[in-house]
Structure formats: structure tokens, C-alpha cells
Image (cartoon, rainbow, N blue to C red):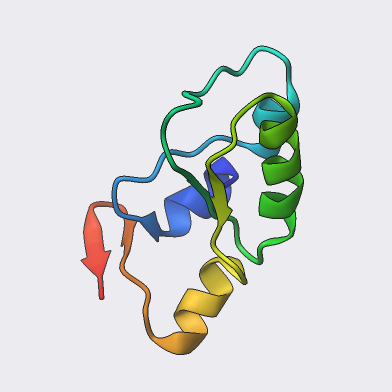
Length: 86
């Protein structure tokens, strides 16, 4: 998620790593752990997943529909400004 979106609310224990950082050659992520990508709608997550798989991260999953889908389904457990919303 982009920093602005992350501040508005995010999945508990998530980290904000902007797409530009994921696309850069400098980012290194563990290849032996599951990585779940989340963005607002899912579009940037798909681009990030392809980039990470090309970098050798085989365990990449996308939260389909992003945070918008979670909100629409009432499944959102997000954290924003220290407050947890369920």
C-alpha cells in the first residue's frame, strides 16, 4: 500500500511498501515466507506480485479486490491512527 492509503487504514501487522519500492532492484524480501499483497483495489498488487515472482519470491498471494473488497464484504479489520476497526 502507498503511505497515504496505509495511514487511512490497513490490515493489522501489515507493512507499507509502495509499488515503486517493490519494482526497484534494491528491495529484498524472504523467498521462503508467504507474502500477501494488499492495495486499495488490487491493481497495484497484481503488478507487485509479478515483479516479486520475477525476483524469485514464489509464495506471493494477492488480496483480490484489495481493501475495497474487504470493506464491501464487512470483513475489514483495519488499523488507522492506533484504532482497530472490525
